[in-house]
Length: 201
Image (tube, rainbow, N blue to C red; front, side):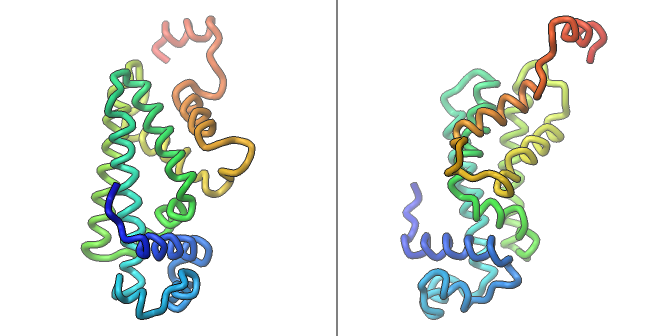
């Protein structure tokens, strides 16, 4: 665990929620002060401008999810098990950080300069990790990069329809998505499977 300042944690969580609800452009520093319970002077102790808050939300989020994903797969040897563990970690992590997920999805382009470059490096590292895992799965029928973005597409839009407190817990949702990605919605019957194998798909 990183030795993060608890007050900064609270500020970033409030900022993520406010950006997710109002949008980055529609949110002022005064809005963030009201939402977080900080004074303006208290916020300026941590950041000089609103964009820095957006950067810290995104940079921290990518840092934590990358570290967690690497840890989740580190003790596994089976390629499919590693991929399932990656999916499980990604879904459960963002189920607990739905506001941050929405901010990552919608507000990346609001960053500029070195902040934007840093977040893009983090994102590239995370996509690269998934591509490595996909390359290791035997019998794959798709380009790993295409497959990686397709899988992220499945997982990253859950904030638009999924409710962690609903009937499907995050861990169960992750398993459903992993099975859907790896096995498809409709399993091939034996005759179709032989046909696919004979004709190379």
